[in-house]
Image 1: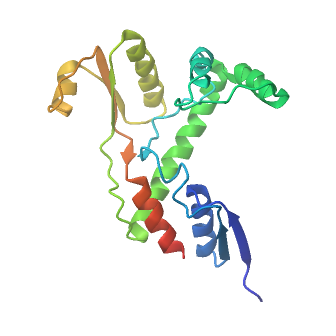
Image 2: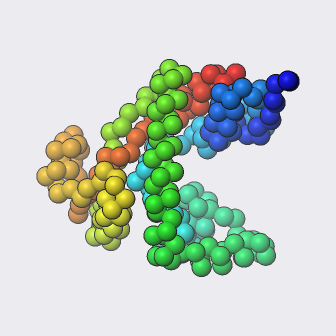
Length: 211
């Protein structure tokens, strides 16, 4: 029987992971990408692997923030304004989806997905001896306004209900956790479940292991 073959389009983390697991199943894989794999968002990002990010983008309150972001080319959610029927339809559906019921339904699914992703990253790093600076120091969120703190406290409460390591910190606890910083804040929260690595190192070495 001839060996199975597959073509994977895109050399970002999704494409490389697909190729990696297909290889493990004995499939011969060819990856096709317009660049060399260093010009995508998987290569250049903050490197956080964050199960704490359980709130979907479509959530209550995001519409007003999203409108401000959409007009700022340097924002994380910029969309070039244009008269486009599909874009308008997408915007209306996005607004419809931005409700508490959908957030509550999506959060457990996102948590399971991201916890599993974190586990798989750890397995790949160990099995393939990838030195990408992976560590699990958690994520400390410093809040300078009561509004921001209120939002983060709500996220902590939801994360705790889903079994994630998360807590609201006092100023004293914050300073103890990170004593080298002078804080201008009203409060902070800490997500001990979150990990970090250097994404471009991981992507480079992961790509080498697949070849």
